[in-house]
Image (tube, rainbow, N blue to C red; front, side, top):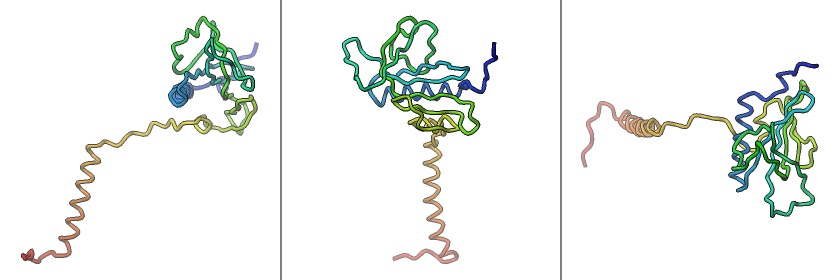
Length: 168
């Protein structure tokens, strides 16, 4: 029995990014997008897919996968589905696999399951910028704006230093 390589598993931060991506895709597409985590050969992967409704006719050209069931592991919102017990037919969108390649930790697979992109950082393969930059404090921004106006007034009056103001 081999010991799994922890480098071939998603970190908690990466799992959070993947969950946010599924939620962002759901909002963008107006449909639930599921993100299921799985493992092959001791390396984790994530599949993004849209669950098909019971009355929905699947697109014959699209790749289909089954997601959910006992032991399935998901990140992000589950779209109100009972994924712990039920298995759902889904339209596969794309996937990301972790690799042991020293040149690329992640490989992205397209809608046909073919490798088409790779990167050392997960964020480079995701469709949304998930960096959490701090938003500017609007109160400080207002003070800076007021301070800039005072600086301009000081510049104007500096050229007339020592002279009395003119009256018209």
